[in-house]
Length: 231
Image (tube, rainbow, N blue to C red; front, side):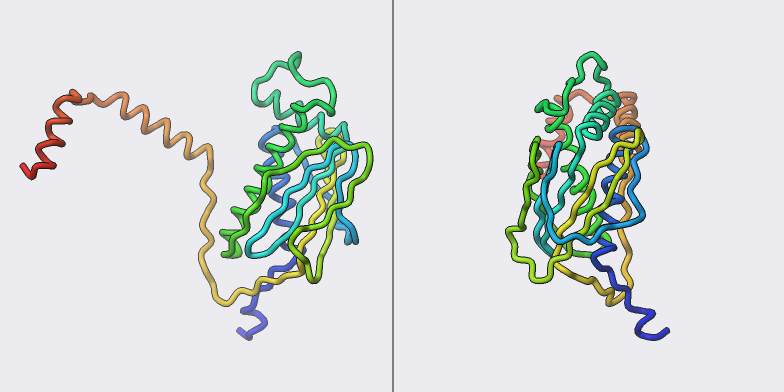
């Protein structure tokens, strides 16, 4: 095997794909619906917040960048409503407009989960660490251009279109310094624990604890005291 075959390079488009997969993974589970993204990506020169709702997160560490999600009012309401209905809220209690603070708060919470999923993936797959700030959500009537605090020597900016189950559109934009990760040697990528498996395991342990007879607490305290005295 030659050196070229052994060297694996992970670049901007790979990072973008990982981020897009985090978006679909989190939103598909949260809304119990099918959200997908376009196979075509746009190379753009500016990144910003656009109407009707814009959300952005800065990240720093192994590499720096800015992630923006721009929702139309229809896409925002669809995602918000499906998420809240999945959580058990009655339809009659849902917010009636995308300008509601509740809609912005829910989308901000989902954005936080998306970037958290992405940063976890970066730690596992690229063996580096990035940290994020708290997502900021804004209801907008005009476009607002953004710049990253950390200087980007050779910025790469991309835009990807996403489609909800009802065919409403929202956009992801990513600004990142041009970077490449080159694999020096093979390593094992730790698996992501399945939340359902962890919950089932915890419930199983709780059931066993409840089923097994427990000794009186006084005896336990006495035994612990004797052990601490070396007896």
